Image (cartoon, rainbow, N blue to C red; front, side, top):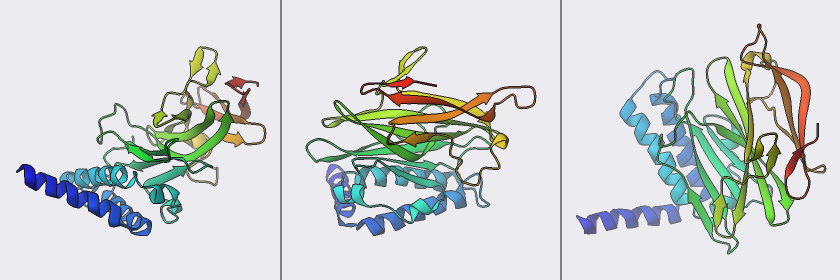
Length: 261
């Protein structure tokens, strides 16, 4: 049995090395299409096939994610939309893959896999087993970057879907420290102390007129080294939060992002 397991593992390892980035993209799109087909939002729900395809996406992303050519590949077809998202940093050293598990109801469940390049040039990938994390998770569409004294700081924007009307967005900081990815980089100075992320909830219908999808509510100014997001007001008409045209801005001072307005 041990020898059979070794042969299977070796075969998977060889396959992950043999596939071209273009073929990998097509393979991932195929799994994502199966999620839409067998998930709770499609017409052919099949829990076993749904779980299998979700696990295949995770396993393949982790396996392929150790390849430098995959990190360099732009995934142009996936960028076109769907349930699978690829967000890549400006320097090309950090990426977040995320996807809709298609297992939820009005609240959507998402999973993610990280891919990054260490200071040695080696490329790494990591991800939890599907549904290991508590909560519904978010999908990630943008990765901003600012250069700090100890290296680049990456800011990932995520979107949470709580229901048809309840949504949320966040911006989270990451750093690569030699060969390790720090997912809790506390570089945002808030009123309650140093944090690695800032988030807010809102009523989706207060921004439904935005033309872009997904709706973009975090904005990064590369020249000013700052990010901003809208003030959200809860009132009787929109108890989940109404997005206004006023903004909160955080600016990088060389070490931390500090609230300036």
